Length: 47
Image (cartoon, rainbow, N blue to C red; front, side):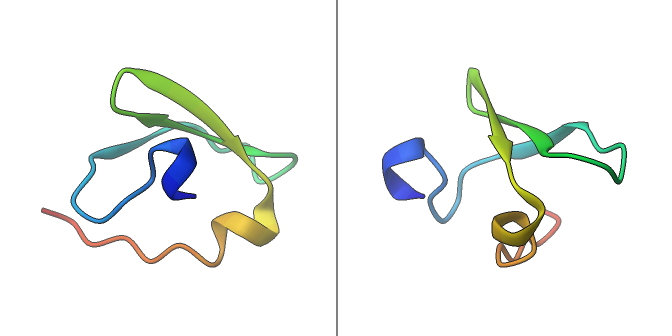
């Protein structure tokens, strides 16, 4: 995940969450598609 830009302190935003298929998140200036299994392993805190 670190190679994809998902590291502690980075701002993430939910772009698309249909509850079906991948979760699309914004990571910095880019976007990332995460499978539901991987997305469920990421702990996020609201800043």
